[in-house]
Amino acid sequence: MDLYTETILDHYEHPHHTGTLASPDVHVAEYNLLCGDRIELDCAFTNKGAIADVAFVGSGCALSQAGMSILSDWSIGKSRNDIAALSHDDVQSMIGSPITPARLKCALLGLGALKRIYEPYHSNS
Amino acid sequence: MTIETIKKEFPIFSRRINGKPLVYLDNASTSQKPSAVLDALTNFYTTSNANIHRGIHTLSEEATERYEATRKSVARFINAAVAEEIVFTKNCTESINLVARTWGHASIRRGDHILVSALEHHANLIPWQELARKKHAKLFVIPLTSSFELDMEAYDKLLSRKTKIVCVTTQSNVIGTRPPMKEMIKKAHAVGARVMVDGAQSVGHQRTDVVSMGCDFFAFSAHKMLGPTGVGVLYADYDILETLQPFLYGGDMVTSVEREHAVYRDAPWRFEAGTPNIADVVAFRAAIEFLEEIGMDTIESHDARCVAAAREALAGFARVRVFAPESGASCVAFTVDGIHPHDVATIFNSEGVAIRSGLHCAEPLVKDLGVPALSRMSFYLYNTMEDVAVARQALEKVFRIFSLTSNP
Ligand SMILES: Cc1ncc(COP(=O)(O)O)c(C=O)c1O
Image (cartoon, protein in one colour):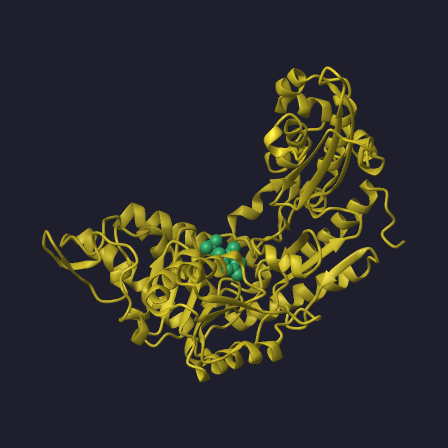
């Protein structure tokens, strides 16, 4: 089974950057209503507005949760422009497994959450 | 043709999925099609294709005859009194919308009560939500008992003279529950309410008799009963049907037209505006005849054997929770502790086994069941005990991949 690589399963069973931040600058949520996947993401910024730290809580399939874990690792230190430039293909190659169209929305849930960080309209801070 | 050798009649079963023979357990979504139906479709286009109800040339007459022949077959299949009680639509969803928009629009007033069961597919919920909102009527839900049946005591309490319609499915597409239709319809009629029955899940799986059931409206789709996609049916008691205003307006549904006004045809043609899905309606007849040849009682008991075998197979896994209402038919819904249904379905697919996972177009019901989502195996006449065994092996693979022991 190619999709469930050791990387995916590792991140799913032992996700990085989970929990909440003590004083987040923004708190965003992303849902996949069709599947019931859910991610809530806290983010703290550096003085220059780059990502200093993130923490997430979520529930859902292995792909959505491992995806967010992988993206959390990647996101630390990234700027607003880096996040804006992050594409579906980038996320697919970070995840590294072949993803069928039906599972793409699971894999991209974390990307959706990250993008929201810089959408003031969607944050409540 | 017997139920043992039936898979051969369905060309799709020569397909391999991920190198494995296809095990198709997503029949509640749509069924596969036998050669008889595929041939009927090709045959229509190669021999009789023409528009209906409009030409006097041979082809148009043939096409009209074949289209209307399906109406007669459908009427016989569900035991409607006359073929004129059968309206063709594009799917079950459209059939229900037709009732909400015509009967509902004319009959529901401010403060009226609309009852829907907790089991409903979105198709038999959202049209009524929308009607209630527009008409300032109240929508009430007939709840589930803890054993996943409809709560008949609660139903009795909800029913009143204010109830104008009760909307209920013959069989849940998620957990298979079959409510006591006759009892529910009798009680609804006793307070003067109409009953909209969503027959999508049961009509291809058990004998249907709209007369003895006593329903006012009965909706279903051809594609879940071996027929083509794009054909829906609405049965309505003719006394009601003939009083309803049209649903869509245009050609074919009129008898005479002037610039300022038009005279509409009688039911059911009044509800079939524009060129209908002629070829698929024609081919649908082959599906009905196929089912009749096997026999609905044979199909129902075959389904029951599959369900029993699947429940037994799943009972062997302590981490698996099975939703098994006593009245449950044709399908088995389950969750695996610690593993999301989408991961379960993806791994099943890697073994060639097609199952559905998610919310199954019944989001409020899934919430009532207290789970974020679930997986479902749904069976039909071509499934075998071997299919159940392959599904069981796929489930073992799920546990292997996630390094969980199946029996903690
Ligand atoms: C119980 C039930 N009602 C209605 C529908 C809607 O059928 P269709 O999508 O063909 O309109 C379905 C099928 O998904 C169903 O299972």
